[in-house]
Image (cartoon, rainbow, N blue to C red; front, side, top):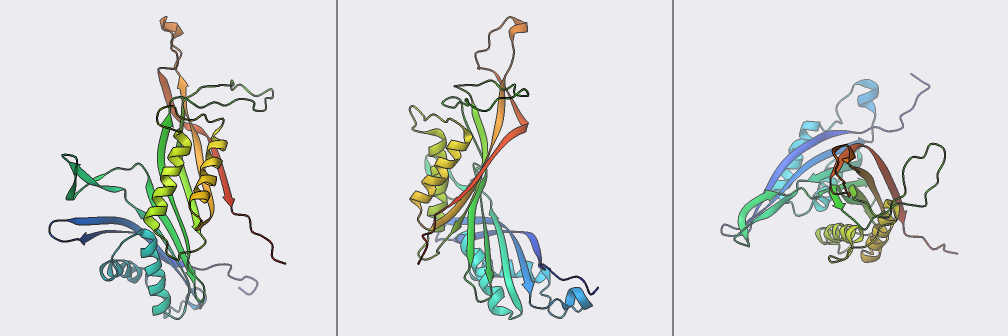
Length: 295
């Protein structure tokens, strides 16, 4: 068909699961469990146009490459493994113009027995799921996004919501004290990879979100809205990690409604709540560092 053109082509292998065991000496070992998706863009479109498959790196080959690089390169962080995959495909095949890699890491933690870290036993503790997106074009520098998701957090007080616009359809009462629950999804972009410790930055971002949400351990910190808490966390992460150039975050407002017990002759002072996951409010913001104009 002569009056159409391609806007994008890519293909790859999704959800390749691998468990990498790093033997550290004796019985001491470490693990990384990843789910990897790869995507390649080729310089030619002849596979689409003419059914000519001679340039295609089969998706099964991409799957095997993930396992082979886990063996030859090892797996230290998901970000570095994504960079290794990008470099491999671009250096091995001159007709690849772009590589994309998405990785999710399973939240395994070393098991504690008698208060001590076990040498080779682990427990799944899904307090937050780590992920990254690594992309590199030929003749271009790699671009790395990292993030966390599925981090479900709650505080029982020190949260309110008032002063919002009201119209004839508004039924929500203003509250100065409420239970606040959310499930955090955050993604950030690195401006430089030079000397970057991916593990350290991810842990800083996670702990910063928790600190801005909860406040000091003894007294907490008041949240005037999910919007304010989200923005404060993003700003604090940019302040603590200069290598992050932009960040976005989604924090749905998961509702817990007070159960009406008046029909039972009981007074419920927000002690018994009914969790409701749908519908929920959804708050999102993306911010980046301002760029200074050059004359």
